[in-house]
Image (cartoon, rainbow, N blue to C red; front, top):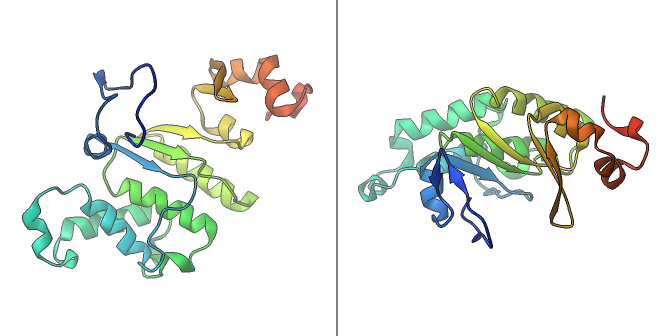
Length: 203
């Protein structure tokens, strides 16, 4: 996402080397991200958080001279994103009044409000109960039809439910890479994440 410099290798987006691009340039080229810990304006409403995200894509200096409410495209982008994540009726509430699962959904909505083609999601299920996790997994499945999603996650049930391609890391090093069935059968992955009993792997 450009937040940190690469220590080695390269990062390519649609064939173009973006390794040394700044975070704002990467964002303008359609990459949006969420963070492991909630990164919201707690006193802003859910709608205002989304509208601010939509506004961030607009780099015209003269656009800052009128109230945000005057720019219909920002408002429409915010409404559309909230509807997609199931928060259409919660847009008027401050972010601090939302449940943990709703706040995570709001972060995804903020990413969507920037009209991305690629979503980078850092542990979107962290701290969630089973019911909230099911809702977010269903949302991510829906989004994967129109967006490339790069997901960091420790919830193995969710990982196997969502992923087309997996890279498993242990202590910062790559342990295994492959499609879900290859990873499911990998004995090193079983030992590292789920114990030696392969029956513990999600079906």
